[in-house]
Image (cartoon, rainbow over all chains, first blue to last red; front, side):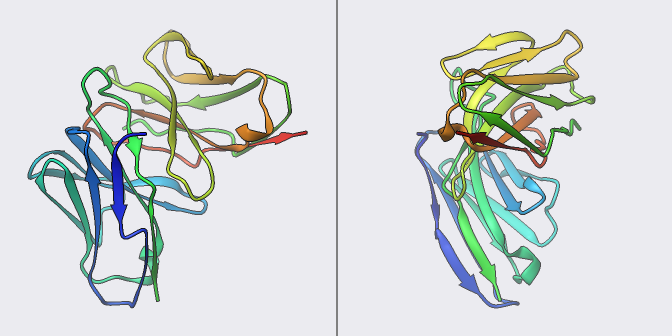
Length: 114
Length: 109
């Protein structure tokens, strides 16, 4: 399995508080992605990064921001968490040598916003 | 932007071949087609990827017609452990990707 870790794996927080989720890779892949997964919606892209300090919005980016200050880390921040952001969040990476189009996923973070 | 459409669910008996079709009418020239498998409480896992015609690996085959507006994942002789959700993904590295809602496959003994 690709070397991708997510932290924390589980988090409970209250509405209005800031939350930061971390994705860490040891594969030196160029691209990193944040998805959320909700019942009835499959996986939806929140933001992605195509290099250090280079990011772009996905399908459901409202209420989220990201940062990538180094190749191995991609942070997802909920500035002021809302109950609608209760979800499972997956990080993915791609762009490895000779394997550019395949995305590899992390184990996920379960977030509950009360 | 290439969105995908798949059947919501399918049932199959053990040992049968299962074919899951995905429609992607707006596929772009540079887009690849990738299929993932997901078990509960886990991240999606790569199964197979292709650009055109047919691709086969040790676990599945992927059939892509010439117009590339659809693709079919073929799982030979499924077992109970193949019960999972299967996603078709169309996109190009560094661009937008749409997973859709996936196909929930249930393998019956």
